[in-house]
Length: 68
Image 1 (cartoon, rainbow, N blue to C red):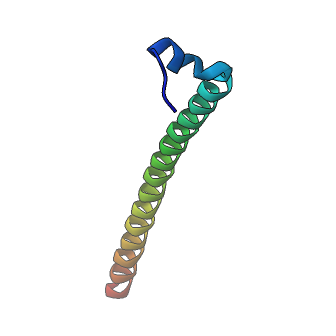
Image 2 (image 1 turned 60 degrees about the horizontal axis):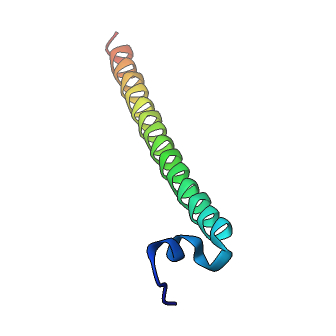
C-alpha cells in the first residue's frame, strides 16, 4: 500500500482508529506479558533457593543429631 504523505499513513485510509488501537493493545499486552514472566521467574528462583537452603539446614541438623 502506498501513501502520499505521513498524514495519509497515520490516517490509514479511514481505518486509523482500528489499526492504531490494535497496535497499541498488542504492544501493551506484550509488555504486560514480559513483566509478568520476569516476576514469576524471579519468584520461582527465590522459592527454589529457599527450598535448597531449607534442605541443607535439615541435612545439617540430621548430621548433628547422629553425633549426639
